Image (cartoon, rainbow, N blue to C red; front, side):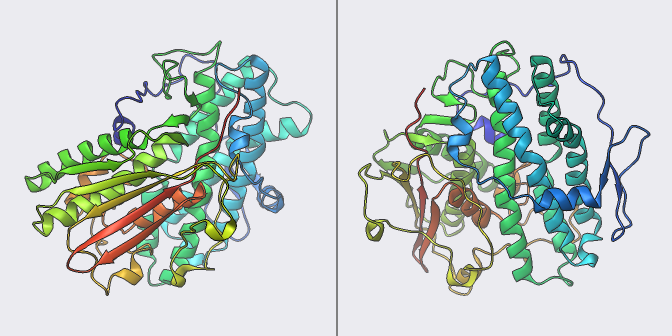
Length: 456
């Protein structure tokens, strides 16, 4: 995955096949629903997901996920007791979250859900729920995951589900593109805002347990772990408690510059100033995605406007002392988007946790005034239905190459970069603000909230 190769100091090991672990073959779900005629492939051992199952789970209140939940099991390697606790906690959250997304998809107009791509996403979520239901039912009957063998089998299943959902964003984007005559842009933006934020949390929960699993005894195998290996003791699962933004920016800038040179034959210079030695606790892969998207925009504007000025990235840590509410700068969505969605956000360990603000400044001519109102919308204007896949049209060569092989964002030209980056930032209590001076340049302010002090 391209994004996992960005930050060299934070070496990531190979994704495991898990083939050497004892497991069972996962049978597809059977879906019988009076309101839809589509059904998943069946087998005689398939798990039946009924309307009642989805309705009952979707009526359960979703747990308000906090970073304390993700780190409460301690630093790896975890004991057997802590590892089993992590597995059961993960199991307690995922079926409810999947059911809520299924219900949200059901609430879309029937003609939209009938689209093959939207229906495919529904089937993916349905199948995922059917796979987890046996574990859920067993736990409800007083038989939780209570042995390492069961935990290995559950983690194997979890890894398969994470891989299964890798391409859901571009597939969903294609579906909404094809249905744009039947659903308004405002409805699409509202749905995608909620869906993508929920997806961030769901993947984070799953990937955190997988990461803890592979960095804990007795399962640890340095050649198979999808997470940074133990020579990076600052990691707790996917969370780096000593993340250095300057290192991420430098690596992402080199990556995007290489692509820019391949596409345009030139690479804009980058200057990192401010306080580059700043560190804070966060999730590296989220910061990598956001910074890459911001730099892609800055580099493209700089090159296409033939600017010789460097792209300047300024890193400024927030003071650790507690501020009054009136003194805390809040970055909010534009007026046109406020109130249109119920933003999901993760609760910090400490409201006073120091964060960091990153400013990316370019002299690439700024954003045309007529475009500014739409920069936070999920726009499909630069993508043609004749393209085989989002991002394949070549209309945005820089994005198309940068996103090649990345299930997270192989949606170049669809206008997902800014709103999806904002979703990641806001999920952790931060935000993105854009200040543009037309015919001059653009400043993008990325505020990231730190996780807080993690003991143990």
